[in-house]
Amino acid sequence: MRSPFSITPIGTLCSPFKEKFAVPRQPGLAPSALAYLDLHDEANQIEAVRSIEQYSHLWLLFLFDQNLEKGWRPTVRPPRLGGNERIGVFASRATFRPNGIGMSAVELVNVSQNNGQVTLTLRGCDLVDQTPIIDIKPYIPYSDNIANAQGGFAQAKPTPLDVHFSDSALRALSQYPHQAYHQRVIAEVLAQDPRPAYKQGKEDDKCYAVRFYVQPMQILVVAVEAFVETPPHC
Image (cartoon, rainbow, N blue to C red; front, top):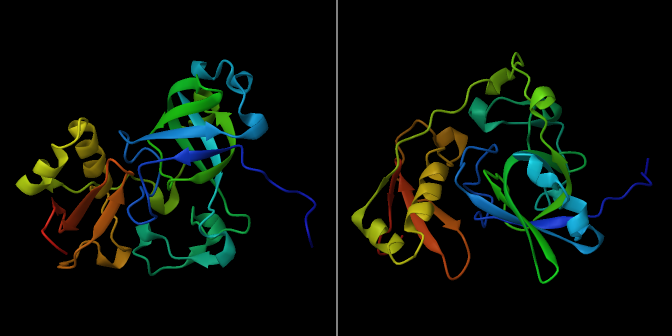
């Protein structure tokens, strides 16, 4: 049955995560990462976000735009279950969904308008750069934070790994004026162990490259057993 409904994105998110690999699997796992939401077309009005600063956090509704053409799957293999056990798609937050819609709770840092462009500065996003945003809703603590809620197989927050930077990686970071910020975001992302689920907790001598940011800030980091370095070639 064809639906008469259609959805038009209200904005686009500019985030530090330039590809799906290593994007935090849930919001807030890389709490230092800043992202910028530019509103589009009719939504690009400062009146549309009037009084939004009274909320510390927002819900973003977005499209899994990189997966839409691949269709959806009735069962999925969540990484938290090792990538082997299948569960129903509606019992997960998997990206392959019937309508390709996701939701993410993020911290609101700032609202600005420059040359007619309304931008929301956000913190703690788990979205790929250029993700289409289809709606924004305030996070309401008394109703959205349910103290006795059960989280199924994702009840507990993942235990982060220790991330260390080699001298060569620190020298690369020192070229940029916001070294501490970039180092903190990289460490928070890699601490979640972005490798495939079946690799986690095992010996692994493979090199993994993670791409963050855009020019002029672009750093290649390599994680081997939770150790970060910038080798001459990989």
